[in-house]
Length: 301
Image 1 (cartoon, rainbow, N blue to C red):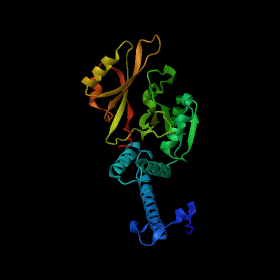
Image 2 (tube, helix red, strand yellow):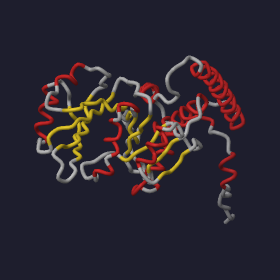
Image 3 (tube, rainbow, N blue to C red):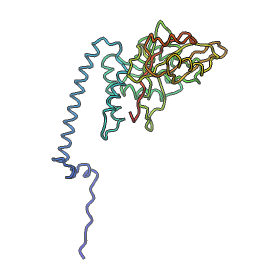
Image 4 (cartoon, rainbow, N blue to C red):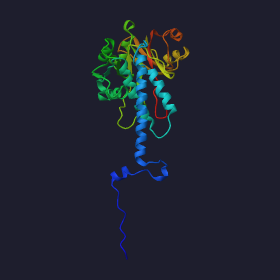
């Protein structure tokens, strides 16, 4: 009986170079596919250069700040709504975050001050994720140091830990934003992409700058005020609701033995300066708008 030899096994290199099957319907095989990818890449690059030229005109238009997180959020949301196909939504998000970080740096010297503190590298990684792989980033030991960098103009923004009820009074950095002669504002929340893949930083942070936030269409705002220390959280929520606000979270800073408490409230929607609802809060003293942020998106955006 004649010997039948088994078919020769193809090497990985042979498989990688193999032309597409005939049923793919692409004439010319792999060389033609690569040529098409090169053509598309050239078109993408040409459009990126064209976009950069427009950004240069925007930088000369007199807008108040190079970093506009509300505008960036609306761009990303619009593109995610349009997206389909097999390219992962996270990949689209990362491409645009890096490009937006790059064009922000085109418009002004941009440096990020990070208050690492007890969060260590987690907050630094979160800042790097949002502001780009090569954006200058300065890691500092405390929120006070990071805020000082912004106040002196040494940094464009500060990335600070998300306030919680468990914070000691010295760590309640948001109380220092109440200086009316040198206002700082909360302008963004991180991470903006809320679906956390394995290995991604899990910290939560707020971004502070010297310019007020720009609305994105889907926002939340922060208010701060002072009241009697024994005032209950339920009473605070009731007063806010009666004035027309929808509270999301309430953080209390009550120094031991002090008769008053400082309160940070997160509410639904953007709140402009001079909002008439602020005057409808007689229970609260020294009410101040601390800024706000564009609501982050996730994999289902």
